[in-house]
Length: 265
Image 1 (cartoon, helix red, strand yellow):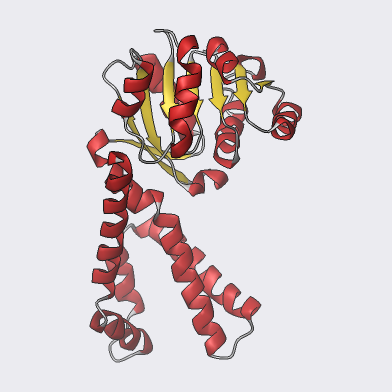
Image 2 (spheres, one colour; image 1 turned 45 degrees about the horizontal axis):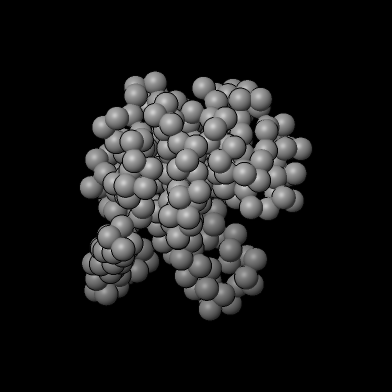
């Protein structure tokens, strides 16, 4: 199966790297386009794939095409490639908030896979959700599963759940980074240098994640750390007093509603 990528920025390159390293396609079977000639030269030199500044050429040469572009670019790119789009081609979109119906409306008769990966695919620890239009063939589903399994975990959901996926795992890394920022700043406030505060906070977060791999029960692990009348209990009581869990729920709900707004715009 010839694989095409339209738009090969950071996310596109990570997916390309997974495809090549897992031998899901040979370099000669991959076609990549991008607006930057410098970027294309780098991609060709690094991965040995075919490159082009013409999006239509990528569509013509490929049967499975990854649309690794910004949501606001989708309309113009689909209008450009529509003349080259045939019934034997499938589109894989990672554009946040762009519905399958929107792509079908522009391409007409097409097979579409909507994908919501997160930033962690860069270290092959991604969480990716997939939704398929009714016309997608089983071999195309399997190929897309393999592509995104090469950079992390994959789940399949109904498209209606994509906004919730975006709010939890799509935006999720930013919540973790924000918490780490706060922990580091708390350490600085207590007198540590920033490098030492970062080391203390980061290694604690990293170790906690490793523990979760074994236990998969955050509530139980939290209780194990929390001695009655101790320092952890005092901190957690304060978080409960400030309704920390409710703040998180409301923040995720805000992300969910924003994703719905983008999907409907």
